[in-house]
Image 1 (cartoon, helix red, strand yellow):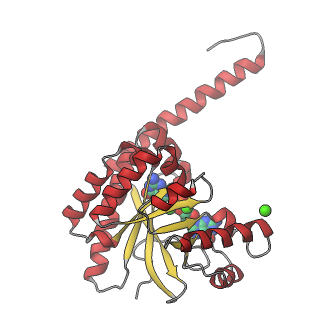
Image 2 (cartoon, rainbow, N blue to C red):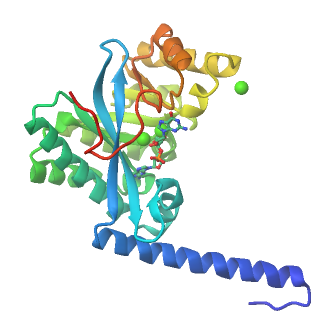
Image 3 (cartoon, rainbow, N blue to C red):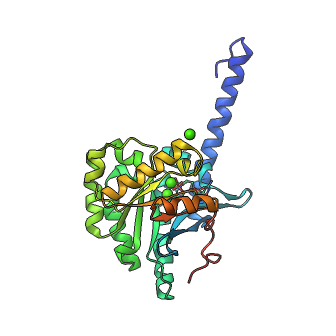
Length: 272
Ligand code: C2E
Ligand code: CA
Ligand code: CA
Ligand code: CA
């Protein structure tokens, strides 16, 4: 560390060192978490507005830390992404969620699919289709019962490679959704050719409904765009009845959010 005469620099160095130390600790902790079974999956209902029923659930990872308690993904996914740990985490979540779905189906529940998040890192590696096909085979889950959520920015990062990978995934028979839609920069020409089933409208646009004019205009435009391309739209982050009513009126297909149900463990999830 540079110990310059100016306290500011020395302080900055100390902060950097502290940050680096915490990061190394976090990465080691995540490795330990995977090996020692500290990861959990919570499931959040995805609700169909037309049929008024739960059609699927989204799998969301949690870390049951021995000292810190339940750690939300926002606190470790970013570090997991740039350290490479995310591949191991996503692989674990994928397999775990597929096994859970097999159990639900065997118990006669009418859930159509479980949705799993795919990090941009795993997505850009390209062998995702092989991993997915292995997990489907190992668990015996029909491909149509699995939905993969890929963020808009991951797709638009390298659209040609993404297109090819999405086509291979589609050929396996899994469902595909574009996550956080509206926060990336999709070209419409590209979007039209992507073999996806669903756009998930980012919750930042839903937050301002129904009063914010911009959010309302964007929501209406995304629904129209999706429907013109024969895609379904799910609105994320629905927290209030008036948002739900408005989305229904706008012709939105599916909703997800605290108003319908929070992410919960499989034991707490209320299934019919
Ligand atoms: P996401 O994929 O957009 O997931 C939705 C997030 O919004 C979840 O946060 C969920 O709990 C939260 N949410 C749901 N309804 C509402 C609502 O009504 N209001 C508000 N304010 N929030 C709501 P969570 O579980 O903390 O996950 C955050 C992000 O972490 C996810 O965003 C996703 O990008 C990432 N993530 C979670 N699990 C995984 C995973 O297994 N793999 C990867 N690669 N990423 C994951
Ligand atoms: Ca998601
Ligand atoms: Ca999202
Ligand atoms: Ca606004």
